[in-house]
Image (cartoon, rainbow, N blue to C red; front, side, top):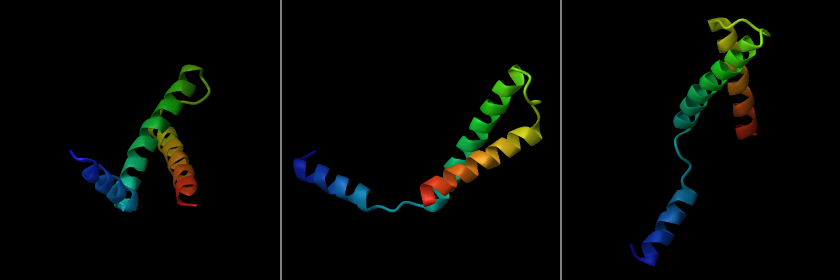
Length: 72
């Protein structure tokens, strides 16, 4: 690859806005995994019960915070 091609690729990536649906999907998946990890860790030390409601709540909280931080 020549030097001119590398510059063109870098400019294209820097100017790309991307698809916001990909960002939201990645945020949802990673927030769910992180929520599962948080609730799983807290259930090991007997702070909360490991169930679907607690995992969903943690995932929604993480998703909301991540969305707020990245979009503001």
